[in-house]
Length: 140
Image (tube, rainbow, N blue to C red; front, top):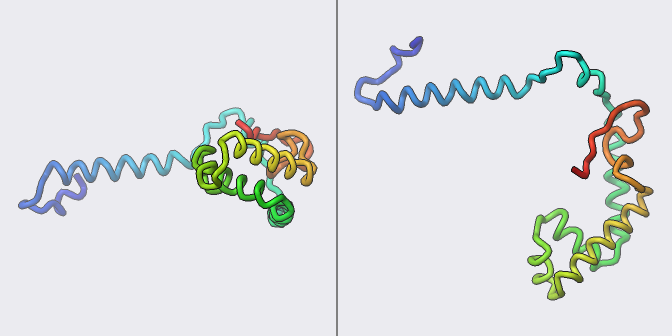
């Protein structure tokens, strides 16, 4: 009601009120998105911050290993993992069977994991080197 003076008499009252309601809803939603219900402080106790340069080094390692993959495996992994194509779509683009595409992606992932020294899901992620810090499981 504080903005009642801004209403134009010849305009649609219902649309004007709906706009106010909509904007109020989104404002409340944005403010609540930044809040975390952590009454006992358990979430805050798990937080840790890593140095920023390690992410850059991880990306360099990833790019190096990706470049070392055979062309067919790299192509399959990029189409499925980065471009978001389905196995069927990628197989059609490459002119191979779906099973062949699945095999290429699986071999590429396994080879990359081996080259990067990744043995289990806990070896991946921002806090993999932080002792005593609980980690989210990136595979779920």
